[in-house]
Image 1 (tube, rainbow, N blue to C red):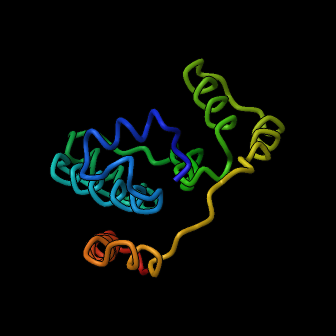
Image 2 (cartoon, rainbow, N blue to C red; image 1 turned 45 degrees about the vertical axis):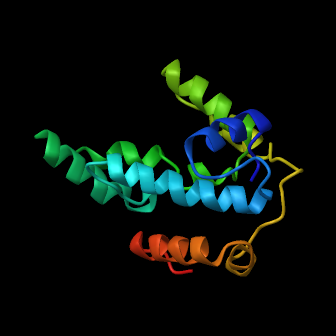
Length: 148
């Protein structure tokens, strides 16, 4: 729900939602339809929390040996925006420059958290906005192995 207007315009061009829809409804529609489209295009899907197993499967598909030691440096909460935009920009720059991140920088950037986050939206709120979409989302989340 924290996307800027430019991102929402792009999203609404590619999935069934409208800029006139409420922000929670747009966010719910985005999550469901974007994941459904990703599933249609993907040869393999996995939970980021299960990256170790997924990496082995990916490497097996490619016919190469899996080296899971690199995963020790990959956070499994990278998509949660827990650390904020500044952290992700710095982290990307460090990675592209092939630098080893220093712990104090990681800690400092981790404190760069957005303060204007929208309030969380739960299943009850989504159900009130669109019961059919809510049921589809619950089924998709369960298929991914998440318990609502």
